[in-house]
Image 1 (tube, rainbow over the protein chains, first blue to last red):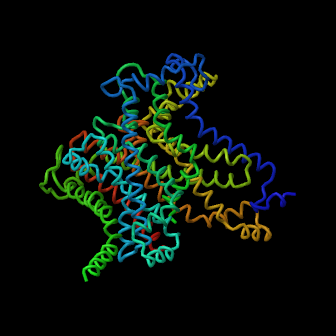
Image 2 (image 1 turned 180 degrees about the vertical axis):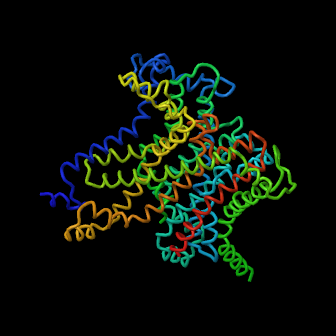
Length: 293
Length: 297
């Protein structure tokens, strides 16, 4: 019987071992879910219930007050604006940054695989290494350059920064993806008289759907979740992560835990949403960013 | 005559087009990555304070840096944090992957649960764990309410233990990702090999120790590289979880660099610390990327 079960796994495990494995797996599911549960549940309680009650308990009085406050009236830094304007900053930053870096990455990947030239691996290697530098090394000159360009503390400045440090990854994705596409087809089209952009448009682009989803999700998640650039160069146009940190760390007044939790969930919602609807592609992006090829 | 010259020009443009398309990205990378790195290296040898100052002072900043108590704390902390973080994530990720690979019912539900923290920002993770570990409202309070009066868990307020709370939160965030990498590795192993070994009488434990785990070498390497690079860059999580405190107990190179450069007006020292961070990451990444690219050619 046992060996019949293991058609695919090839490894036999006894009944006791299996029970133990299930228990352990469930325990870890609990570990990963617990912080999310605590955040959601406590964001729906009035403050008195959070400070006086049990963090694990469901709310006695369900209320959306904390969510409303986090969104529109909570004190962020010096002004009681709530997170709404910062949420908009993040969107205004993410959309163009993702679009631009993805288009550039696609073109770069196309050149690096189908129009190879001398030293192209070195060019790619230099771009690839830029994905892994600690950004602390560029903070000071970047601040100076943004100041010179008049982009310090603006959303376009943040878009520029994210495009510059994002094209390494997008190029990596498209390069590895196009590398598996037969170059003979490109050469054949060339002989038929098709030019550089025509080949890209007619032959490569139609098959680029899956990798574009991966690249867009990766860039969206990274840029939305970025804190270091946001806090360093955001100025008055700070993104959501910096605003959330301001909200949570504010040392004045009563600590409104329920508002902090609601704010944290609002900050997490867009990426969580993407993860839930397109988790498969999210995982593929993570893997492609680490195990190349 | 004219048309053939025109055609000639067009072919030449076509020849150059790929390079013209790639050139801006390459130029931007050279300037914004490598130019900036050189500039920061240069700053680390100058007497820059609040603003950049271009008088060279030799190794002075590095001497000062290594004499600073705060930097020593940061180095010790990154050592503790990085080693625990990498080891725990790897062990946990491998264990969960092996267990999930046993034809588990509900794998499709469990996998996304293990992995979703990776989609959150470190600021959100930090906020969640900050309150979860807070003795006043978090775990300690709950345990006491549930009748375990003597339960005490005050690591986040404790100078000696706070660094471990960062490990907990970071492991929570990324161990699912490591699990996914190992799981992909496991699924790539040819079952015939395993069956053959089993026919030869190997037990499950031996099978994993002798055959499966050695075959996962590439996954070990990738996860080591990714985790170490995440560990050295860790800035957001420390800021959100402990703010570098209590006191300076959870100072890390990333937070050190930021505070010396932008709030303490010691730009030269900040630049020097950034250079050391870069060198550490480069020592890990360069051989890895080199090997990967060479293999491809």
